[in-house]
Image (tube, rainbow, N blue to C red; front, side):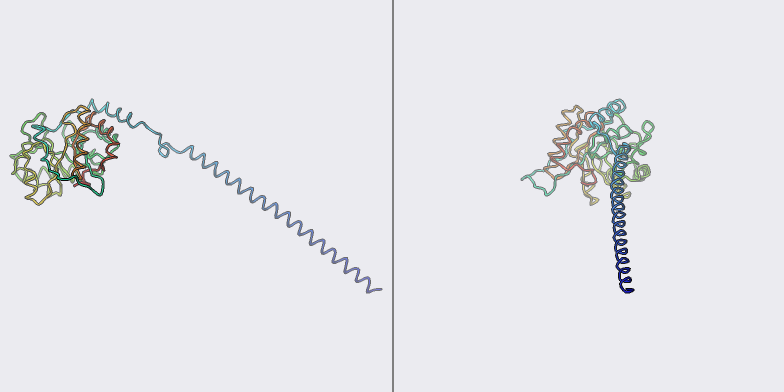
Length: 329
């Protein structure tokens, strides 16, 4: 009898353990479900929060990160309205447009180039902050050539200092002056005087590597004077680009004697300042670049010149690679 009682007790104990195990398993399952649900709910909520915060941040971003679309042409016109009141032309003195044109290089066949022809456009007579703004408003690579500072234009060197690349537009003696710049280089000046003038320019414009002549029909047509100038420029590692204000220029001969490449402008854009003329000269400059692989054009910060350049942007993009002059020479 005693044995049977023990057997019954064992069976009942086993059932209790089994039920307890099932109960614990059920509790564990419920807890797991709660924890999993909480985790996914939290992740989803966190993701939504991040998205919401990101959207809020984007909305609150300063205007510099999300620039508003501006009407570039309108901006250019506004700048030019101010500029036209302040710019007194000191345009190149040219004895005769026909005489000043560079010699024609005969082409037997049209040349084919692997890359787009390069065109550099120099804007001379840059001297004020408003001119710099107007030139930059055009939105294409234009090489600014700054006149040296003087009493009426004291900040030209300071303005140039803010630019990565610029030229200096050095005044030289003309046959006939309409408006002479102070400190103009003259034919009678000695080698020492010209060396000192170039040293002064280098001090004012420390980054200068290119100079072109402002006026200069008399100076550039004098071989002795040009020898002195090129000697001085070489000493300071400055390249000379002939603005070619006279067909009598001795620069080609002098540059050859020094073993240097002669580089000159091919087209004046605004010898006459009406816009149709400038637009025609732009097409001429493009044609020269396409014929020879490279070309240099010179213009001034006149309202019509800058507007014509702006209106020719699609033409430039189609036919030439518009570059700063240091990419050509």
